[in-house]
Amino acid sequence: MRPELAAWIDRLRPGARVEEIAGDASSRRFHRVHPPSGPTCVVMDYGAPFAGESDDQRLTRIFLEAGLPVAAILAAGPEVGALLLQDLGPTSLEDALSAGRDPGPLYARAAGLAVRIAVDGTAALARSERAAGPALDAARFRFEMDFFLEHYVAGLCGRPARGLAPRLHALADAAAASSPPVLCHRDFHSRNLLVRPDGSLAMVDLQDARWGPDTYDLASLLRDAYVDLAEDLLERTLEGARTALPGPPDPTGFRSRFDLVATQRMVKALGTFGYQAGALGRGRYLSAIPRTLARLERTEVGDDLRRHGLLALPPGLEKERGRPGA
Image (cartoon, rainbow, N blue to C red; front, top):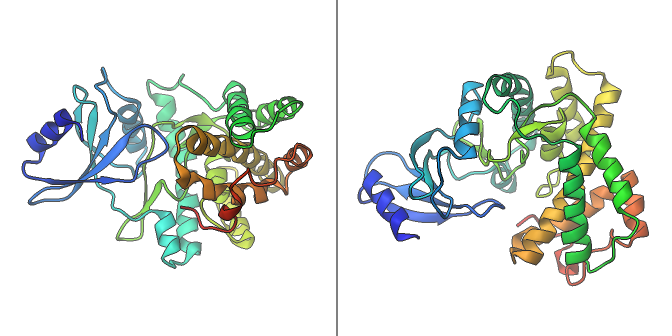
């Protein structure tokens, strides 16, 4: 741990024991702080000082204003590049499922939370200083498709990507235009949803929340690369979310939007896995690749990937087939 960060923690929680905990795909690091008395808390370490407010601070304010369950910020230390956060507990949705918890109620709660983000969160975002902020628009989705071509196709698979970009750009454009924008958490999946002792859910990793399609967070949840979800449970959960939305949306159109956005997001996820594993050496992302490829195989884009030899596992990853998310 950086000496200046350790000194900052000791000023705020004298005598506390500090342990590093698993982080996300960003460069941030996380530590759980165990003070001699009182509740534990979590330090988010950016690695360097920052000026003003971070996106985590701005977005936490928006989520809390909307009544959404995220960690309160207990203290900010821009001079050391850190935030002290409320500890929401160590149990992720992925952990709860791995421990044998009944997925039905958990996914019903998670989908209900996604609906609240899209409804209450959208209203809060529209009132905020980020109302004109970043979006999951066509330009962003095209960038993600190019990132996939660079870091998964060329980087991890070692294959040329000739002829694939126009098809993927068309997918990006269609996904971006699929609905009027709402607030999206953007990484609303089992590793970023925490199951609290009372069974309620809370969210972490807000830094990339922004405007996006109304099915984006549901696609992140129900086509989660780290979890196997029975199709009948997916259908029930998705229908429950649809009927909870204002309107509610037309069933056929809503399902089409979901499938379209889910396909774009799965391709994007492969780009992330390629970058994390290939460029950064974070092998924990490799085991999510077979599951994602199997799902993409059933889509129209899967036909294009098959023609380019991209539905086979990348070289050296055959051992990952069938492994649970790590």
